[in-house]
Amino acid sequence: MYNRDLDAVRDAYRQAGPTPRLCLQFDDKHRESYYSDRERWIRFSTADSIAKAVDDEANLDEVSHNLFLISRPDLDNMKVHVCGPMTLSAHQQLRNRMHEFGQSEVLKLLQTFSRYPLLLQ
Image (cartoon, rainbow, N blue to C red; front, top):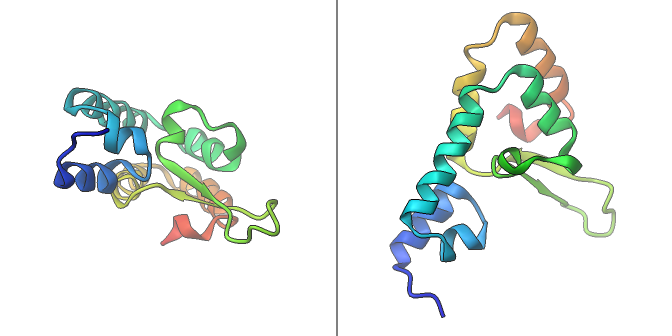
């Protein structure tokens, strides 16, 4: 069904996360566009936009949905969820961007992230 090189699929999984269409259906051109959109969102993000994306996980927009992964560790209690960066690459890019923020912006993010401990690692 999919004629994809296994190394290319693994690389896409590491860089883009567990999104089958990115790993199996997207060609290199589409995947580069995806990465470019994600990097642009991070580069122009503010403390408010990051906090909103994490705090309002039910309404993630197209790009932030590609940065954060919502998981439910307890399938018997669907109200409990964990929100974190989808990949190590996204985590590093977000962390680097946050180093550019002022002290008040960082404090606001820490307040938001205290509800999502995975983001503080």
